[in-house]
Amino acid sequence: MRAFVITLAGAVGGAALAVAVILTMADRGMMPINDVQMQTFLMNRPELAAAMLGRYQQQEEMKQKAQQTSALMNKAAFFDPKIAFVTGPADAKNTFVEFYDYDCPFCRASLPAIRKFYEANKDKVRFAFIEYPIEQLHGPSAIFAAKASLAARRQREQYMDFHFALLAEEGAITEAMIYANAAKAGMDVAKLKADIQDPEIQKSLDASIALARKTGIDGTPTFILNGKLRPGMLEDATIAEAMKS
Image (cartoon, rainbow, N blue to C red; front, side, top):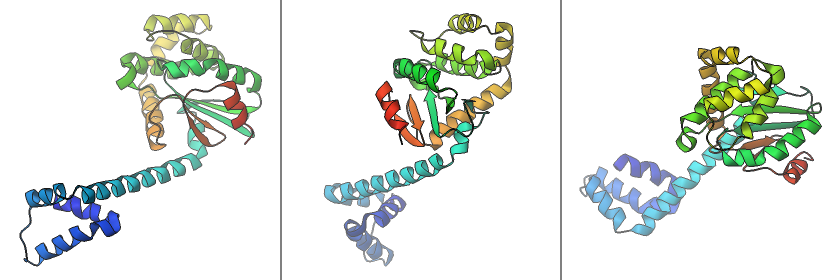
C-alpha cells in the first residue's frame, strides 16, 4: 500500500503534499504508519484520494494516447501481408484500414458502405483488412472465422468475395457457413480446411490481435482512414469525408 501511495503521490502535485509529509514523518520515526493506517488516512480524506486517483488516471490516459499516436505513425505495420489482406496500389494517396470481427453486428452494418467504396476505389486506394476477433463478446466462432479468413487469403483471387459474403451472414458464424461461402466464391474448400490447421495461421492471428492492442483498439469495427483512427460503424458520407484529408 505504501509503495502504491508513493507512486500516486508523485503524480498528484499539491494534493500529494499531505501524504508526503506523513511519509516523511514516518521515515524519521516521528509517527507509526502501516497499510491500515494509510488506508484509514485516505478514507477520512476522500477528496485527497479522489484527487490522487483522478490524476493517476489522467496520466495513464496520456500515456496510452502517446502509445497510440506512436503506433499509428508506423503505417507499414498495418499493411504487413502477414497480418493484413492488402490490396490496391502501394503508392496510393488514400489508405483504408479495417479491424473487424465476422460476428460483430456493427461490422456487418458497415458492410454496404465499405463494399460500395471498395468496388469503386479498389484500383485507387490502398486497403488493409485485419482480423480482430473478440472472443469475450462473440465466442469461439469468431476465432474460428478469423482463422478461416486468414487461411482463405491463400486463395487470393477469390478472397474479397468470400470476405464480403461472410460479413453479410446473420447470426453466429458456423463452419458450414464458412465452407458454403468459400465454395460460392470459387475456392478450393479442401485446401481451405487444410490451411486452417497450419500453425502459421495462429501466429498471424496472434500478430493481428497484438497490433490492435498496441494501437489501443478495444472494439470492432475500428478503421484507420488516411492515418486517422475512426472507431465505430461507417457510412458513405463518413468515408467520403475521411478521404478528403
